[in-house]
Image (cartoon, rainbow over all chains, first blue to last red; front, side, top):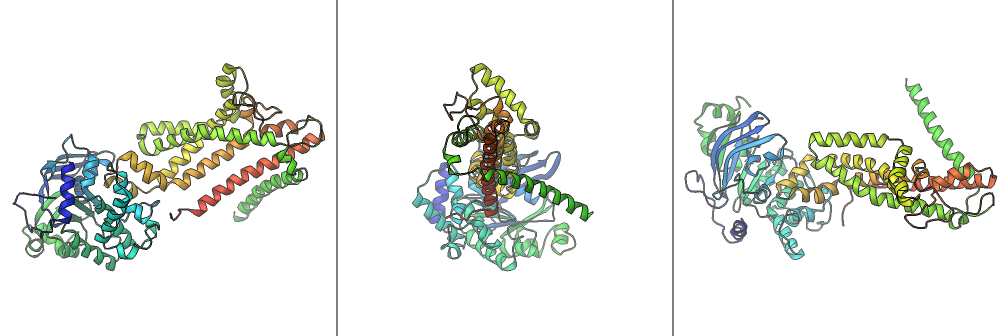
Length: 281
Length: 268
């Protein structure tokens, strides 16, 4: 577990290899996720119906589909956040670097430090300054750090999130004082400060205007050099613009999954075609 | 309809203003610096002050706070964060009943469990009685304020890999701090003005605070005793003491308003 964090740290600074595109069949290394027969319930309602998919490392995987198709539930299973909802339950396996995060011996809290998440609505911690928001994951998890380490991590994360220049003179101000787009980048900085291997994004731009959306999309291209990114989006143009691979969800099932250009230019399944051409959804 | 609402609103405001005005009118005439700094004189004798009673009330409220704030806060945190729907529902019901409990019943209860076994009226028993009055108020306001912290913030904290208890302590409670402090101050204001529970517990004396296990006077008790005295000078003292008590509670209420109006601080 700790070894993986160390590896994650060095990967970020040393290994700048270009992302492997369409790594569907090749063995997954780094921050890749291998999902096997994942099912998720809300009470007795089966929201995710046995999904199996390989999510390649250091690439952007987009999940599209109409509302209620289970794509958000699915990514909440990838960092064990689904089970936080009362009455929610998960079955199946999700392997991160070959280690099953649903193994009974695995603490969900440590999983969430390795698989970060950015939510639909920017959710900076209201009582904290910009600095403390970014440092929160470092300060409040189990590893103790000195002030200098924190300052360095905050600066690095804000730079990676393309927010440093805008906030470096007001780090003590409340995170809530920023604009919506800045808040979302603050949340991204907060997520990458703990050096996760994977970043999950649940419709990260749905509350943002087009300019702020463009900034986040550019940022994602930067981030995929170091992180595996899974993004849920309602916006098909966004999926086509940013992602390397796309999965189409419908009624809790993964209908089609493949390289993004293929999904959008010649989908194999009729339902995928209907959805991306705007016939429903 | 609007006329009726306006009329009754005016009536309510008028009653409040009359009480305040009448108290201030009678009280301020007998209020001077000596009233706050001097000890009381024997019954029927003019002059003297309420120093001991003021100190007594401060000590009682501080003691009640020392017991009631931690218990009430923990209870509120449990209700909002850790209790399942069934358990929390039961505890919440009990807290609501406790809020409505007549304060004299609380006084009799403290008499039974502390004054009788210890063999003496005491500040301790008074503090416990006031704490019992404070606990449900603090618990419920703390719970309500914690629930107001948005679920998105909770999820954000958990998704960072912050353990649950840490997220509650460092993210959720600070986010609710304004509401929690408001509840604590309101409960203290309520406790400071209570008389009935003190009649059976703290009892009152003329020498001020003598120790936790001895009886002590307090402002509400002094008002009660002086107001029922046959001597005019004592009755005037009661009015003045009422003004002091009202001002103390007013100060707490102002602090509450100031805190709630200030909202979220921009931390430096």
